[in-house]
View 1 (cartoon, rainbow over the protein chains, first blue to last red):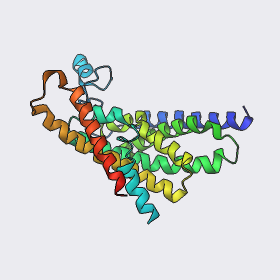
View 2 (cartoon, rainbow over the protein chains, first blue to last red; view 1 turned 90 degrees about the vertical axis):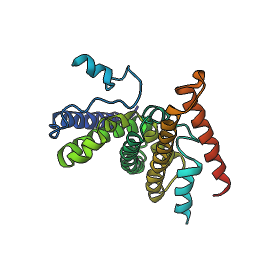
View 3 (cartoon, rainbow over the protein chains, first blue to last red; view 1 turned 180 degrees about the vertical axis):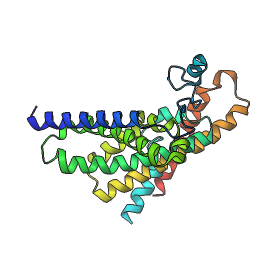
View 4 (cartoon, rainbow over the protein chains, first blue to last red; view 1 turned 30 degrees about the vertical axis):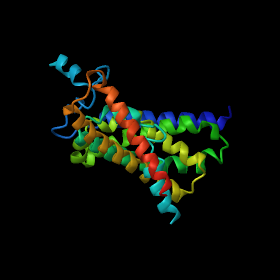
Length: 57
Length: 190
């Protein structure tokens, strides 16, 4: 693996981590605080499924 | 004319869902209500168009000159994941209405293999920049049309008199199969 490849991968990972941190630290708009609940499908393994939110309540 | 036939071809004849079987997961998962299906279609359209242009530029202006084309797959995955994070952050900050409308579907696009599929197909098919941009619109438009029609059919299937053993996923898959046959029939027209 060339040095170019290593530098490129490090850059891409840094960009992803950067955008992730920026996104997670950006406050959600009013009225959108808890929008992770979804009833689109029946996959209860998904963390967005309504069943998980009912447990929390 | 060439771009028009490319658009029609990618939207209908080589439909990403019904002929290549990409994005079957959201097709089955987010097609219970037509409104949800349409929201998913809008979000996917935006992300595929931007991802298509960005990945094309990165491949031809970064990976090729550095002779690291073998990193295209991992590059595209990380770029698409970063892009979705960035779009989510941008919408939170500047367009709360669109953010609210897209809701949970925006982060779920990261797992939609059609986004990665289009980026890789653009490279393997040897498209020019304009062709890649047209593909970036045509493919998600085809996806949106199919997922919306499928959602309306599934809504009717809920009240249809279906044999017990076919209820739910089996009849949904049979419906998708019949739709794929119908789409394949358009091939002779273009």
